[in-house]
Length: 173
Image (cartoon, rainbow, N blue to C red; front, side, top):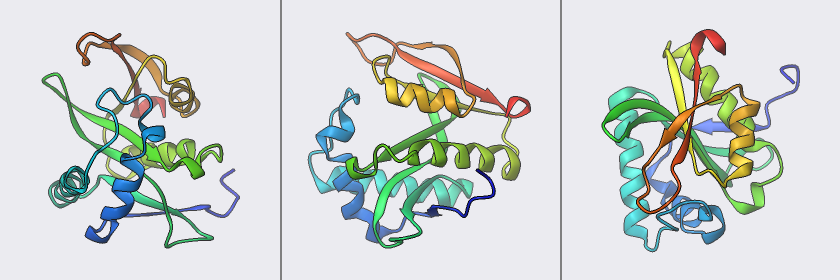
């Protein structure tokens, strides 16, 4: 796979990405496993984008806006790593969300693997975590494909089954 030309373009998000953030994070289908549900207005998307931009400014890395090499102006999704709080414990969390039309092409796996490579080989981070709802089979499969292993549970959604916590350490990548 490494001999193949890259299919995806990764870039730092920009304020102009606001409509794409809302389109993807506001879609009920892309939020099927999100206990908070889809975003309901542009203000929520603006707040998320602002957090991403601030994370980049503070840490020098974060979530990327992702497009294909064939259509570089069409954002397929967003993915990357970012500092995250798991109920009081600071960790580096891997995340991804793609538009429905981008599903089934291996983009989440490719972006997740790229994020791990960036975390370990360029940033020198010791470990990366992934948090997933227990019924989100496709996302669990992505985490397993990139070498992450079940690490534990996190009771993060009141009244619901705990989320599954996956982890990979730099020496295992």
